[in-house]
Image (tube, rainbow, N blue to C red):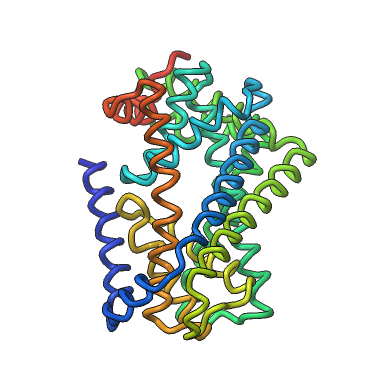
Length: 340
């Protein structure tokens, strides 16, 4: 029941965002821009995107080293499977699926790998905030975009404080857990949750080294600069129209930051609405006609969604996974049923 309500909430939020995206939009103009775009620019756009995915995979390899050294080329299919899962299942099921496949193929605890995945998201959020604040001096944020910045900023800063505390002071983290959460657990669950917490903290081990923290942060910057380059390449397919395009690269950095902060909200699979509406609003705020902004954002979203989803589905089949494995992954994560 809880899962159903979370799924319905995600679809509701997507519908809410789509309403604002479509309100007052001239769909005939959007169609015109789509039919006139020069789509060969998608070739370098997709190429630079997959460079970013490979760098993202190397980052995960780097973070997993204290737990188990695994070659980047072995992790790449697993990362693609995770992206595919996020794009077609609700509630970011791809993150749990990624940890499940790693457990199945490399015998790495789901709890530990999930810790590294959560930390990835923290660093991604911090880089997105950095992009936003870097762009502010050149492109002050209009009032209607500020909620997309302020609330996620507070969320990620709080999350960073929590993770630094957990990683640098694991003994204190264990004491807090035993004094609070553990006391409320039924006796038959305590050993399982104890094991989950222990393995989760193990996954945060790299946080204890300032060198490793700096390395992961720098890698994260490279990843998101590569993705912003994809935004730039897709923009080239539309620049011949004028109507506000092209925009400066720092506006695309701002768009990338705000869009990806917004996609941390629950949504329908593939970030429908939560990706599109902020993208349209950012471009419109900086002089791009609304219909052209909608056409560009739609093509960008499709270029981000289809290639990685298709490749992830191919790897999913190659790994001999089935859709029932997705439910198994969720159950193992929810119930912490791995052996202690």
